[in-house]
Length: 457
Image 1 (cartoon, rainbow, N blue to C red):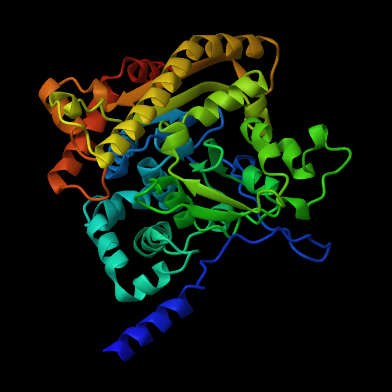
Image 2: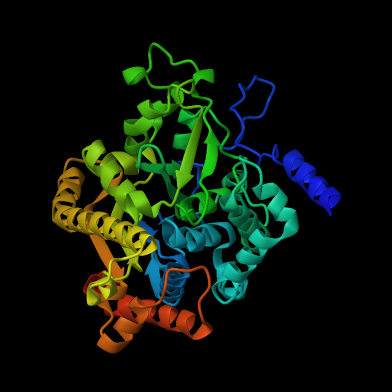
């Protein structure tokens, strides 16, 4: 017996040195080497059915499979919304240029970016209506994975990434998205554990780290964005920033590649430039910094001084409609603790504090978005009158909120709000979430205004 225990102990000790693969440093290219395709929106030209004059941005909130199913329902409704642009028949889904997601919303966003219309054939059986959570729990209990989990460099977040890769993304990387050269452009956000700020999985961000972005698997980005603290371990990224010496000519001492970076990434670059101080970046659930996936829009517009600079940087011309559809699957506050005078348990306190923090940040974000919309609309019109090549003289902005809290049926709304944040749901819950997303989108006044104004063109 003791011999067996000793053998197991030796095996565990030997496996404790196992490390998951990390992102690779950016190599300096020579004139004889082909340059790696960079994943940037301006490198993704519009295909047939997608026109530069209509920009559609989708943002998918966190909330586990509840959020993933709700976002999927919006995609389905957009697919079933035919329109005409420049005399050509298309759909609003084909016009989507950017899809951003955090946590559960990042799963749907990444799958749509990777497989396009294929999402309507395979996403429900592969994820929404599979026992993904049960399979993940089985993976954590597997003796083979127990050996991996004994390593200080390997955690449950890496098992989540492996499961995402095997069941959904099949090895797809950001380099694969770049080589496809098709929209939508994918933006996934995690949270820097040390700073508590958003970390973009983007070419701009990895340029700051002096790291290759093309080899990063989509599964790693989605797992990082979904890594709920305490439940799942962080995903770790290697920082190689000091390998790329700053140029004296670079503005504000930033790396040369950062000069064309998005305003949000540039603003946080200083936190990553000294890789001797921060050689590793630990990433957790993106919802902790922005559970609505819209902060990157707000920050870029605010820091750029308006919308025209981001549009011009990304190569858009003569835009007459900018559409932002914010898909929000967040729950209402849980007042169950307030029904008892018993002292809440540690687990209940942790959950309540986390939920309250998410709710507060999301409320602040919604208020900023709502208060900024009218101001942005006027700035767009002023910029168009000043002769910006990116904007049409008739430019308009549409901010469409698709929130579970807006369902017209009080009883069904309460039922949907009670669906837990988990990786597996009952099939009928998934169906109800998909149907609810379609209903709420169709009933949106702003969505109706968009369709009416598209119809008269």
